[in-house]
Amino acid sequence: MTDTTAPSNSSTASTPVPMPAERLDPRSRQALVLLLAAVFVVFLNETTMSVAIPTIIADLGITAASGQWLTTAFALTLAVVIPITGWLLQRISTRSAFILALSLFVVGTLIAATAPVFGILVAGRVVQASGTAIMMPLMMTTVLTIVPMHMRGRIMGRISIVMSVAPAVGPAIAGVLLQVFDDQWRGLFWVMLPIAVAMLIIGIVRVPNVSETRRVPLDVLSVILSAIGFSGFVYGLSSIGAAAEGGAAISPVVPLAIGLVFLALFAFRQFALQRRDAAFLDLRTFQSRTFTVAVIMLAIGMLSLFGMVILLPIYLQYALNLETTTIGLLLLPGPLLSGLLGPFIGRVYDRVGPRPLVIPGAILLSAALWMFALGLGVATPIWFILVANITLGLSLGLLFTPLFSSGLGSLAPHLYSHGSALVSTLQQVAGAAGTAIFVALLAVGMAAAGETDVTTASAEQIVAGVHLAFLAGAFTTLPLIAVSFLVRKPADAAAPVPAGH
Image (cartoon, rainbow, N blue to C red; front, side, top):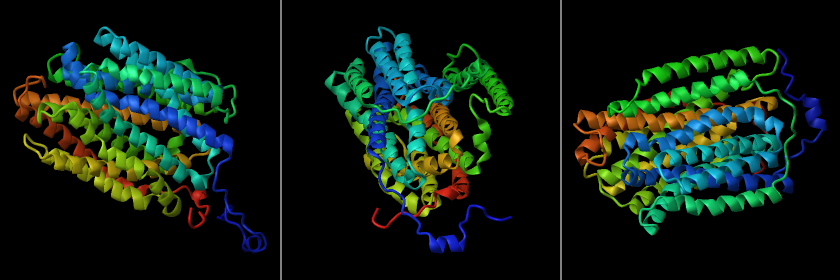
């Protein structure tokens, strides 16, 4: 078969190949800067809860399984709302999507700050998540639309700064603020509120429209099927922890089964709609092997990250009796390193492709989880926890930028919004699964040691639960190493990058 993409020797010899542009135009740069700033704010909010959850558990008199709903409900809402963004971002302009996202986030933050009881606090987190659900696919779709292929690695590297540094500084900032506000967790939301309002005002004035809109019908049946499917699946995962404590109203098997059935129906519905190019969420993205492999690896990475973020603060506070400020600082270096390496890793990706990065990244991720699984005890030195956290951060830095760039870059342009929505959805489902599974295994391990309540358990009982959870997480990372060898750089991303850039 003739390779129609390769230029002939004669045309190559007679026509100089222009060097690709190395800078975006001012309008595109402005859009990306504002989107990155907004995503930083919403990502920062997402992880501030990890340090505050033990305080909220004590203040509101709830169990650890109930407390983890502050993160699970957030991730669950993202999983339900994000699929809609594949349709939404084709219907409304960049500025309108930005304003809608931040308006929801502001309202949710206000509800959470004034919540008198736990249920309303969770409701506030759900409204916040609705805004966050729009913001991340908006940024990814915008990048795919306006950034040339040969520059995507370095731009994705800058995005990784936001994705890593914001979650990293979230726990640290939360720890400091809890000390400043004398363990009053509402202060976290009151600090976030004016920042979000300021970003909303700036967005109304300055965010340009960089995408084209078109009329796309909304398939209501697909919305219903995806909402029930994802919510049932994640709720079932979350109920495992409550079941281990004896507090689940129904068996987790029931919502898990319902979720899986509705997700299967959702998939069949999309296959039918794809025949006339009217899919609510186009699953033809998975025809790209690179995209499929990248999504699987990103999901395992997010599962590990969110599991660590929810579990490690519980271990540090209740097993090692550390203060919230110390806990926040201990969680900071790994993700911070991941973010700071983002631009460098993006440039390396543009030059050599993904495999020299994702293979060692997968190995380091597995090593970090095994360190947590086998090294945490009742007298584990701080330096060991710090080294394990840094190893995890370095591994995610090596994985995220190449996987985002190669996975989404392997898609046809008309699938960009669907690919962004699918990646963001599966990331959040994996994050929710990581949170739910790790907490559930913590409860199971503690129950086997004779206790289910972290506030009354001994250090040995907490360590038993932590050991079981991290051991399971470590085993999930082993297939990641084998899969990492399958990642490829998109063929049309081979544009040369001039030396010195």
